[in-house]
Length: 208
Ligand SMILES: [Zn+2]
Ligand SMILES: [Zn+2]
Image (cartoon, rainbow, N blue to C red; front, side, top):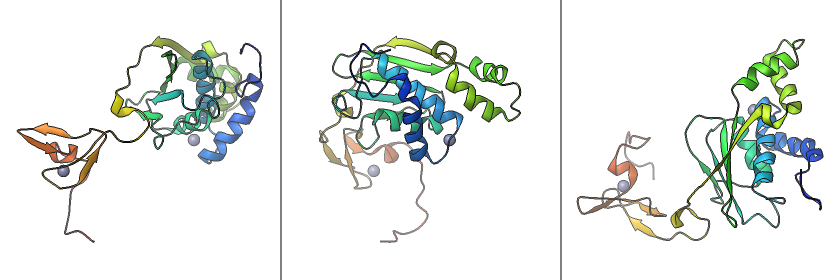
């Protein structure tokens, strides 16, 4: 799968990568198997061999689900929200895009819906469907498990890793907003929850 040389992502390393991701995630599940395989495939297609070493500054991953597989993607790629190398898009899809920041090459990998059904056919004797999926996802071909598409992703400067480009104070709540997430409306600078309803409602005076 790789053009020679020592690689962290050889097929034979699957079990090692799975083992690591299970430790991070807390349990072995079909999502770990899918996430590890999805990441190995995505990274190989964008020409990244050593995501946690020499290539660590060259990758960004866009995950479209906050599910088990997301932890596996983080574990294999080394990308994380905190490093700004993992972006979460709340699409509810079992998909992720792997971007090589150096070359601009990007592929989006999505788990095929049919693979769920196929998993049962691989292991009809296993009654528990998650167990059947888990075992089948380990051995199914990449092309049976995933659809892979070449895509172009443009990353805005304010979304790149590195120091925040700006910090600005919200005219309404007084809290500071960084990374240009503020909204300019009617001559005012507002944070997003002040501009439109946020995810929380204040229910009393500050505790501190
Ligand atoms: Zn899980
Ligand atoms: Zn505000």
